[in-house]
Image 1: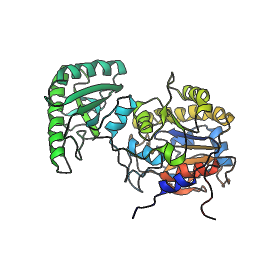
Image 2: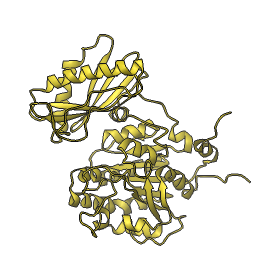
Image 3: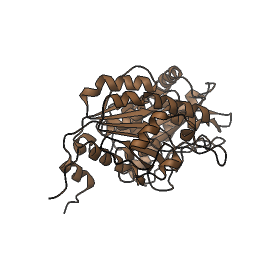
Image 4: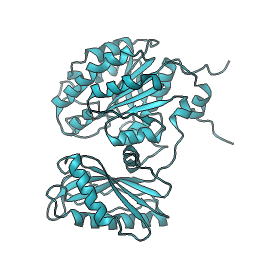
Length: 409
């Protein structure tokens, strides 16, 4: 007997309606730097977002499960309504898709981070000082030359992504497994070996190949000043997913600067929109240009998260304010539903992702306003959406955009 899922329900009930915008400020949630203070979002001057909150509904979303610190990949899967505990996607796949690398069924992808290590191999900077994208290109060419032909039965692809990030893809028969990452996630430690948690033949073989590759790659980088080491993360194959356009009947577009977020959007069936620039205003330029071509728009703003990870409270505040400034341009397009949220929290105080629920607002002409008058963590805690799992957001937006039919007589 087949199991009828929520996706099956949405396939049965979706209909045509108004357009939907999902605006994601990566790492939006924060913490006060001092007891009794305000978060980054609460500190920011956001008159437009406050007005949306007063006219719409707010709450706090949980990307994975309460108390669980999310990675960016699974957190975005949750926003796109895929429960990340069921649909687990390796970040390497997302990075590869994000740069337009066409993955095949025999491809195993890893996200690479260039890093700085001391003479004994201990990591001193996990991001190699955030080297330039131009430097990343040079280093990837160096690694491709040094490692591209090292395996007789496997092709090796080393592709630049952005700044300190790159993609490694191994292509050949018999790859797979449940593979661990090499990044120790803190400085002062050596990179870890890749191991296989599944204890399968394919997994053990893949781990051995990746460890061989990493050793040779680090040798090739040994003469570099900053990027003299590396780590591999999110090692996986493309699992294949039910696609968002089929589930919800939406022609969907992704407007993002960073390749990983283009990748996760591509994975679920969105079309990536090309545009120039990297500021929120440039992303809204792209939104205005393609507005008539799509039903659903995912807009991703990365630097809110980057400043949180850098511990730069003030810069995170200013980036939130830059997003607030473009809200009137979105509203001028007359969407049927607008969601503003984050994929997870990245408090500048912690300099990392955190488990804290994420402030979320849903605005629509059809919304039932709650008592919230501003957009911030404390205000959202009392909002009408309550504390909810992020997978519920798109169905809510669909309803408010008039895109869900009645269930039953």
